[in-house]
Length: 528
Image (cartoon, rainbow, N blue to C red; front, side):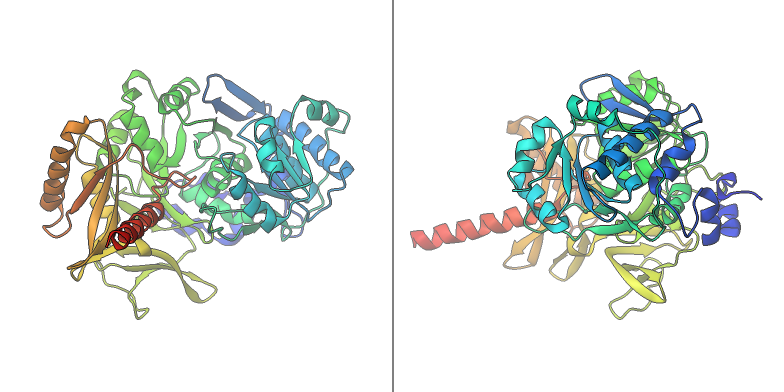
């Protein structure tokens, strides 16, 4: 009987899909399943490379499935020798590397729970997460050890040469005993150190559900050479960028260190990657670096997530990489629910759209009364789960063909003089200006209109031309959108705040504006 990976078309996806058939892609079953077995051990004898880690400073680290299987088994035995038992949490704060993947799959293989932590967290960010998940061990490197210890955690382990030597005395084989419903990973969504989002707790069985996104969101199929530059400390980089492709036995590319778009372009060409899923920001930086035309690429499928892609970047992708980039929409909590089916020959990719629902999922746009909105009307995106409609906290609309479109986060709506405006749409227009490299829009208080739009832009224009640029941006938005949606305030900044996942962090901009306003009011009061 054919597996779901044998089908590529959109029509076949609708006909052939069933949740039960996802289990055919696994070696385990509903009683016994382990993510490390599915992603690593069952391919140990294949002779294939599991991972190619592209380093920001140059060079790559190539890790074979056989090597990763043996090293993660040794790490699982080592954990047991340290007194770690199934159900214990083990935090891992390492850049993508042999050490990171050895530790992560070793933890999961042992039955403990892996908690990946972003390497750029400072002491406050680490402390909040450590106090929340209370790990038995925190694995990190020498550079981050002091920050980790400053949190008061008593058991910080440095993954260095000494530990590698210690691991060598353990057996390179390990038999997991986990059940499908056992917890495997705690995943923190991006947030500030003042507001810690609750960890999403994933079982081993989550890997099965993940295959929906793998098949229809990133279009993964056997034989792909897949790259995801997002950090595995976050949902996109870990689940879609690492676990899903490894579970299909692919060779997977990862990026380690400070992001450099030209370094990424070099690696994509040199290693002939055929499928990539990245954040919209990654594609935009590849465009802005101006070096993509110097390389030859081999892509057959491209996807993105996180935030919409502006038209200029979409043009660059089509002209330089040879494909229309496919949207993939979801959240850490609900998974991927909308996709544009990369590689499906019978699916028309509509620019600007989120695609259509993945098989087995119901998605609608609801108004304030919880009723379905007609095509073209913006409302809240909702997903049907266990007989109930679950809000995504995002706005959206559909067109006459059933494609979904993103309207921004519900809290990114700007209401000015009774008009409802989308920060996403305004940003997309601003990015059409050739001198705007990055852009963000928020609503700021206004005595007359309630709110007005304030824009923040990154540009290479000299300071003496910033006022002229602001006028050009305002006129562009008036022309492309409407007379009332233009940014009445334009600020040129050196960089925009971003979440660790690479999205523009509008919440930080709003908080800064509020703090500036409070400070100005306090100063005025003191002067009076």
